[in-house]
Amino acid sequence: MFSNGVKCDIYIGQGAGKKLLGDISDARQSIKIVSPYLSPSFTKSLIEKKKQGIEVYLITMDKIEDHGNNKDLVYNLINQNRETIEDAVIKRAKFKKRYRFLLLFLIIASSIMGYLTYQAPQEKYLIAIPILFLVFILYLVYRNYYRNTRIYNYWYSQYFPFKVFLSPEKGSGRGKFIHSKIFIIDDEIAYLGSLNFTYNGSRGNHETRVRTTDSKALNELLIEFEDLYESSAPQIDIQQWGKSIYPEPIN
Image (tube, rainbow, N blue to C red; front, side, top):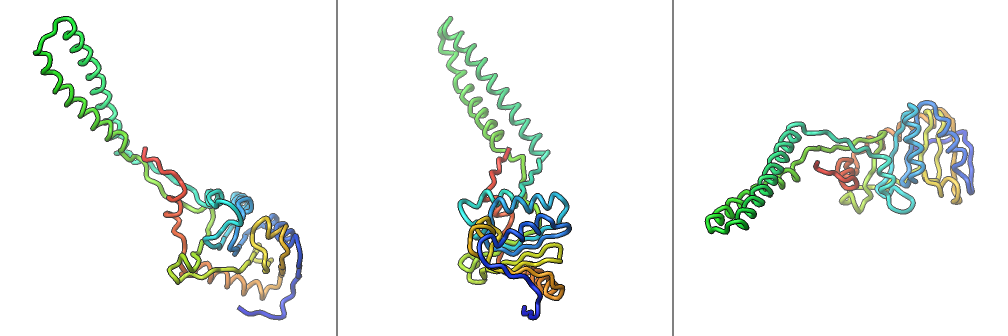
């Protein structure tokens, strides 16, 4: 993309994201962001905008957080969904009923045999030991089935549409590091520059940013954003990503 003769505002220094954050807060229809690094608190603000009915689209990289463990950020972006397997629930209930019955049988039978042996020791009572042992094995089998029967399936969805592209070293050489920072609000305001969608980038760092409402530039930026969003470059698989961070108890 190349565009000249664009009317814009330029800001250089600390606090370069102050006006940007204000425009995002005032968004009425849509927010589109390209930022290789993100902060969890900023991502939460996008989720809040989505809850307000604002369309949100995000493009980022697999090195998405500006500090610390990125699980907090991913938890904000990905929702875990669970469905119950009804047939498995019924089957598991049967296993539970059977192993509890066998346990009760073992307790009662062992008590009776112990009592009889104590009252009148006879070798004929020893024949019950192999029977009790087999019942105990069957009890263990049913209890194991009960504990290991899967009654839940999981899948993952996005809170709002986003793409996480793989960096070159993780994309088997086909990836590309997207270092652009683009912010488009309501398709009417655009920001370009060096600041990421992070706390440091917006407030603490010395950054550059350009703000424009030029309609021609905005049209070109929207096309650029759409092309990038639809890119076939290697991306993180959301289902695998969700499985790597969320626990998935089987029952």
